[in-house]
Image: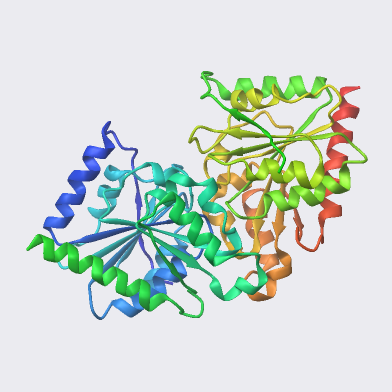
Length: 226
Length: 226
């Protein structure tokens, strides 16, 4: 089994996370690096989605991944083994989120000079990660079918800070009481600008659309930088 | 649709939550009230499990429910409509957990004089609720099959503080790569004393076993109190 670098993240000392996050976002923009902050509840399929998406993108762009977890390194190893892209594990020291300074500590352990896209897989949690701007270029979240279409009603902030909502595990929709239209309405209520893409990380449905969304976001970042 | 009481919980001012939690636990024991703190990730089926379990118990014991969420009141209304037991909604003011003082604020809004069992449905989150003792008599958590059998590896504290782990949605196990034995091993690694009960809140499988576990816990509490 591959070994991955495990970074023990220290608690941020910055009082003003918003300022720090904006500074990091600008810095990354100038370096031409698009940072995607991917959030979700535990077990929504973030890692499987990333593996499939990275495998469709890795010949077109250069990618690195940061896997944030309370403990363990299974996700970072899986990404590295299944995609071959650089992947590091961030341990949050029991904390339920990452802020901009903690994200920066992770980025310092990646070789960014030729990287177009860094994906931060945030801690599996629909509450805390939404409260802290990581300095990411965009926020995306995965809501999986078994979790239910009512989640935007219960976790309003998460849905309001996300530019993109991936509805995953649509292959098992027949076995659950999940209404995609009702889900979209609930998402729009929290965030009229959020885009919703139904996917199945297992069958691959919708992954091309997600990959294209990422490519277009990167184009906009690089174009605006020129 | 029924209306439910919504309590806006204030942030705790107590510095020593552990002390406060132990005091609340003793207080409840003297009153003969068993407080079950039920935790899980979002969408694991906590509310459906509660509805089924309460309907099997409500003729034997007197039950009240506190539903904690960041926002919304759908769960408290559903419990009240589907079971008829008193149910209130606690709003955590954006916070990702409840501590003992916040739990006490909720309990003060229930009529406890004849109640045997209070169920606290904690915020859907596998990180923060595990870090704060609510003063409960016991902790239980639900891990649902679609979340994966590796969750004890990623959320160690949650599994180590729980007396009981319910593995829910076992009716959809054929559609997911979930190994019940591997799951049990992962749970035992974090907490050798935790009991594991596989259930399906949808089909009712295992719910009797969960209901009996609750009844035996209440007997022990009441017997020890006499």
